[in-house]
Structures are given as C-alpha cells and as structure tokens.
Length: 230
Ligand code: SAH
Image 1 (tube, rainbow, N blue to C red):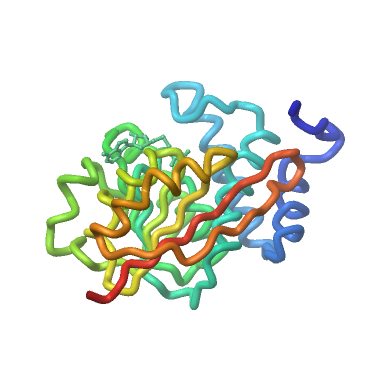
Image 2: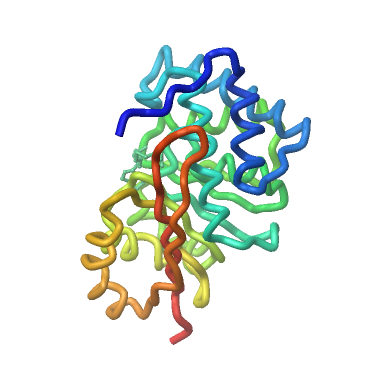
C-alpha cells in the first residue's frame, strides 16, 4: 500500500506530538524540544555518515520516532526499569522510549563504532542521564557481569529473526524479564520459527499487540516474550 500523503503544511514536530497523542502518550514541551534536537542531530550526522536510509524529517518522525513509541503499546512500564536495546543503530527504539520515560535506565548496544559515537554525542547534547552507549557485538557482551541477567526489558527493532533474537537477548534478561520486538506482516512466520527456541530457552509468548503506525497505512505487531523463572 502506498504511504498516506502527509500534509506538508504540518511541521515534523507537530506530526510527532499529534502521533504520540494518538498512541495515548502526552509529550511535554521539554520532551518536544528533545525530539527536535534529536531530529536535527540525526539529519546533520546522516549527511556525513550513513545512519538511516530515511532522510525526510516527517518520515523520520513517523518511521523512527513514532514507530519506536509503538513499543509502549505492548509494554506497561513502571518507568525505572533497566532496558537494553540490542542493535540500536541511531537509537531506535531505545532512545525515543527514554525521552518519554525519563526514569528508564537505558543501555544502547551496537556493533558499529560510528553509531555509538553518534549516540554518545546525542545523549550529551540532550543532557540525558541514565543512558549507556556501548559498542560491541551483542553475543560477546552478554557474558560480562555488568550485562548478564541485568535487564528487566530487552528491545530490538530490525535486527534479526525472532529465533535468533531470543538467543541473543535472553542472556541479558533477568528471569521474569520481557523481550519486546516489532514485526510487520511476517509476524506469524517469525512466531512459527521461534517456537522451538522458546521451548529451549524457557520463554513464553505473552502477547502480540496489533497497532497502526500514526500518519501511515502501516500495521505493526508488537511481540512480547517472557523469560520464565526456571
Ligand atoms: N534498531 C535500529 C537499527 C537497525 S539496523 C533501527 O531500528 O533503526 C541493525 C543494527 O544492529 C545495525 O546498527 C548493526 O550495526 C547492529 N547489529 C547487527 N548485528 C549486531 C550484533 N550482533 N550485535 C550488536 N549490534 C548488531
């Protein structure tokens, strides 16, 4: 389906506030300024290093910021959880989640140094506390004492198929912790692929929330998997 036509008279930030409200998220003025800054930094860095294939500001708001906030639809948060974003890239979904839930303690992991350099500078500019940006491969970092079974919530977007993701994310999660990931139309195939891995790793499918991405025709399936107490 082609993208809905987005009225060009509406500023990207206006689309952001409106889209978030549509998801039941009220964004404060301070947070709006943080998203504006995030947008400006992403566009600036993207002209030098390839962070994202999406370059139009309105599309960044929809396909990155709002798409990240959709994770909250599957994930009731107290607010002060330890969250790890595996393969975070330019910060998605972990950083938009941090901006609207400032008490979250967030670790953003990525294998690529340039992405981590961007994230570190961005977090400084946004004066964020409680965000760690770490370069390395998820497989290698998981065994380290500061990461092993330290997170209540693991998230990932556009990283890998679900069976492999379970293998990557479970070592980071406390028993009883949740893995949250978004898939499009191929969600059923992903769930089928993951069945065996869930048995092996003592995980269970908690729910799948079907949600629509504001200002678009697109649907997402937010998959929530629980790591069982063994
Ligand atoms: N989550 C972001 C980026 C997706 S692209 C988004 O949705 O926009 C996948 C990212 O994962 C890339 O930045 C890549 O460098 C990183 N990555 C791939 N394999 C990885 C691994 N094994 N460990 C850590 N990061 C990885």
